[in-house]
Image (cartoon, rainbow, N blue to C red; front, side):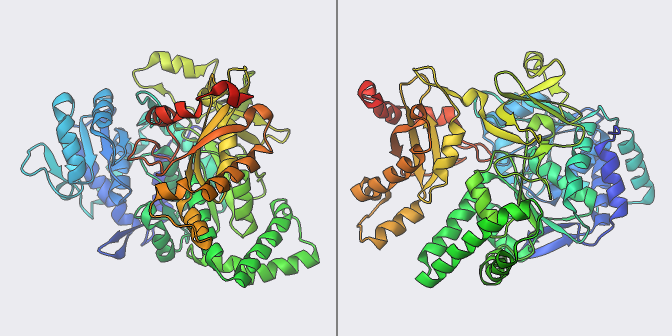
Length: 599
């Protein structure tokens, strides 16, 4: 693959796809649209302002904001000048914000509003390199170090200014670092991955080609742009001329899907798990004839899935039943997502095969992919004609994947980061003999499809020496209509146990249908009939597990895990160490009388 830069890709795309609705954002309850020309003009004028402030190539610039047009404008301005974008989550704690801005040595920081400014102000005394902040909205209440976005950005610019911006942007080389992304991490201090122009450029070209994106398409931007997954997706959208609509957040995504009616969207497994839960709640509360119709349509869909994945014609009778199911059921389900969605991209963690099969059955196409911050991020993808349920696809063009003797997934190619910032030892540990060590465990089949079996550091070694990948068991538990999240534990213990977060809406509906009284979640979970129901779900999973993998004891929690509570990462992965620390006493209760329970 040619050593192309991200800047070359973006500049070419903005020339090819001059459109009136490049970016959609909601303002005052209405969707506003920003043309390509205005978007580029704002980035060019911002770059001029940043130069006047003395920023030069290689300087680090923080960016703390939710998804919005200003995020992409600031990013493009930084790319053009060769500044290194250091993105942070808008809900970042003061402690982590202080660490990331301090460790990176950021000279300037963009922030979305007063809430982020207060965090920066609290950290500022320990950030000697930070000179200015730029507020997208609000101000610093007279603080001379705070600049207003509106003073730095214009909607129009001269042809000469744009030409100068493009000249500087094209001067950036393939090996020039364009971003420093600190991994959210499930343990310890975050590490800053240095990603280059070519890292992104190669990843965009290789992972965006197979999907048939078109300039008339609209993609919904839901996942945080400060995470590499959504960011690269949006670079692909730009390259293909796809308009980008910024969702207002997970709590408003259902509404936004109906308003925008996108054709594609990137998501994480937790999105699909919650969507499935909501769908099943509706089905379970529907009259008996509608429930039976839905169940029949699912059976028809499951029967057609192998043919559709292999792109083979359906037998006549099955084809007729699918057309009927499409008219009566599938079309109505898709209407709740706007009616125009052609496919989802799922990443960040493996999707339960059972869940993916269900979505395929009811007419949704989900293409799974796999990657990490350090790999820009895509390593493998599924795409039309190349899908195998239970896998995350095959390696993209130019990328190699192999499995080490201990089962760890290794990769090399143009997608792999330059290294970790100010962390030579960690870089040497991750990059060995030309291969990046992902820390994930997996397997490659004869056709090159990759399956993820767990995280190397999460593998449980029981007291009996058995090795267990907890994610596989957790995914099976989450397939239950009554279990939302599961954390399997048992390292150096005699047996496996679990912490379970129930799907409370389903449990409550079950209780109401059987006249079980409850006034609180705690009362609901204490009811013997509810406990027996959850036990039956666990027993069902245990039947398919080896003896040493089976869950001997479990506890059902009365509240969900959350990012604000510290139990989830920004991409909705569980923080195992935090959860085990928080629930230490409860876990110890699960292992009281350990010897007898293990027998």
